[in-house]
Image (cartoon, rainbow, N blue to C red; front, side, top):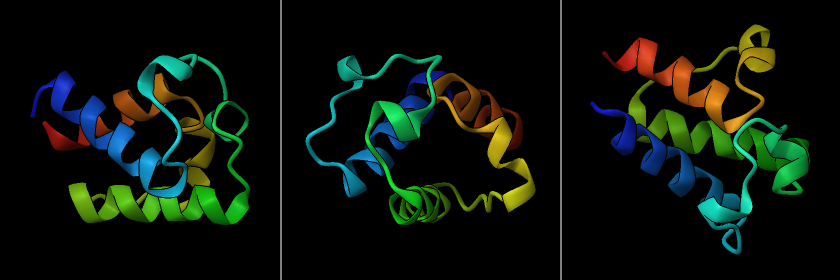
Length: 81
């Protein structure tokens, strides 16, 4: 899976919990919870949406490694390739 495919999966997962958010609205290196105004439940739903589309479960101890868009992209890329 290439980077563009993974980016699309991340955007789709974000839009499941925050449909008004577009990729251009996101600073790729800022915390997604703040950028997209996600509360704890929204963040968990976002992670579940990614699990459904990628098959990758992100454990709680890894949350600090996936807080930004670019971190999530890197995290998923390592596990999908």
